[in-house]
Length: 358
Image 1 (spheres, one colour):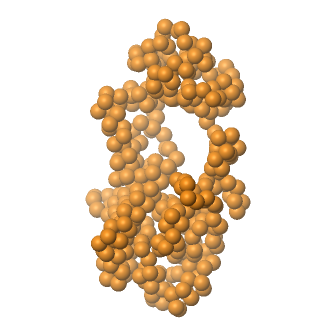
Image 2 (cartoon, one colour; image 1 turned 90 degrees about the vertical axis):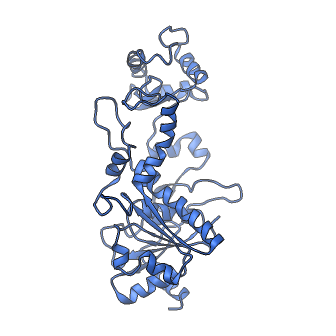
Image 3 (tube, one colour; image 1 turned 45 degrees about the vertical axis):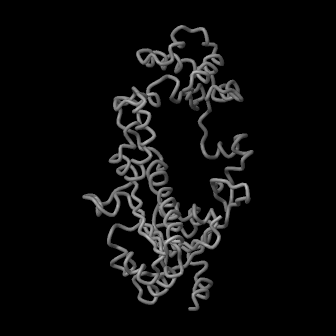
């Protein structure tokens, strides 16, 4: 879908490489400038480099810097994830690059953003979503928020917003002939994702006090432990789905469970469901709710997910190059996406240099 689009990625960590991988999955020609000689940033081969071409350069070497500039001049977009000022000190800042490639979309991926009091300080995913408000509901009432997987910050609030920004910038450059700088900050993106919850708050379904909202308080919106130590998720929000949930459990005529939105009963009904689910193993609950509209699903590890009927039918997970990988997303009716190979660090150096006439 992005054939003919070239992206240059400066090797980094987490959301930057993921964004570049996502663009490569969509068909862009992504060339990653890996650090010459390797180092501690990534392994010799990384799942996040699938579908990319790799050239190994030392950006502090004048000759290699010339190569990097030529690559950037040939590109539609650049991805970098350094702290503010680092690329400028290398002579590869936005002004430098736009001087020779005015149509370039310059994608900057950081946690705090290019401006603000924290812009030049260190941080990680948990810190960014803590400041943005996205961490607030990640625990039971009275306990500290847990450290969630980096999907909320690095990927959701970071990489995917960078991809959106780059594609928007490319479309705009095609229209007006001028590139732009994309300031993709995890604090911005993760806060922006909270708009859905703010809409829920506007409708009266979200409380600023944890454990009192439709998504984190009710007995019908949480996970439960099973007899074998597995888990089952329940989120029967709409009344028809809640009715199906109660019917499957034989609770359709229970007067307390009938009061779905009575918040005073939520703790008691949560305790009752806790006692019910712990009586049987996960497989039992999987079978009981399978095919129903009760909005119940057992919790799977990635390896288990790869074998689950629905995920397997859609071929979501693949064991490729000795790694478990998820297929490209989203899907398009005009093409079949495949897992593309992982390059070794610097594998395409000679090929890329030849393409630049060097």
